[in-house]
View 1 (tube, one colour):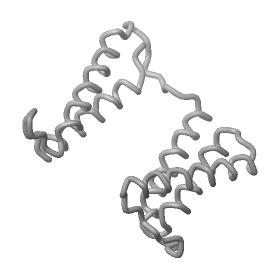
View 2 (cartoon, helix red, strand yellow):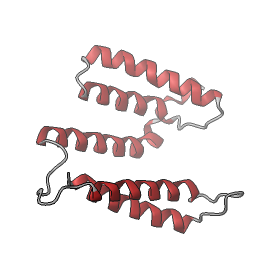
View 3 (cartoon, rainbow, N blue to C red):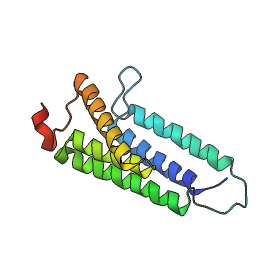
View 4 (spheres, helix red, strand yellow):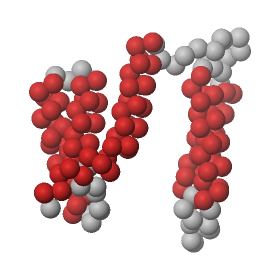
Length: 145
C-alpha cells in the first residue's frame, strides 16, 4: 500500500539525518551529539523504503487518516508545540498537567477523570525527574521548591 505516510517518513528521515550529521557523529567509542539521531534516522529511512517496495502498483495516493483522525493528529501536534513553547514560562507542572489533561480528554476520557489522572501523572513525573536531578522549569509555581 502506497500512502502519504511513506513519503512523509522518507522526507522526515532525510531531514533529521542531515541535521544529525551536521551536529557531528563522533565515533563508536566517543559518540557525538548527532550519533543516535543519525542512526535512528537511517533506520526510519530504511523502513520507509521498505514501505515503498511493498506498495502494490496502481494504487492511488491516499491519506493515512480519515478527516476526523487527521484533525486529532493536528490537534496533538499543535498541543505538543504549545507545550514546548509555554513550558519555560508556565513551568513544568502546570504545562504538563494541561497537556496530559488535553490528550486524555481528546481520547474520550471524561473531564473529571482526565483532570485527576493529569494531576497524578504531572506530580509523579515531576517527583521522578526531581529525584534524578533534572532541573525543570518552575515558571509560575516556583513556591513548591
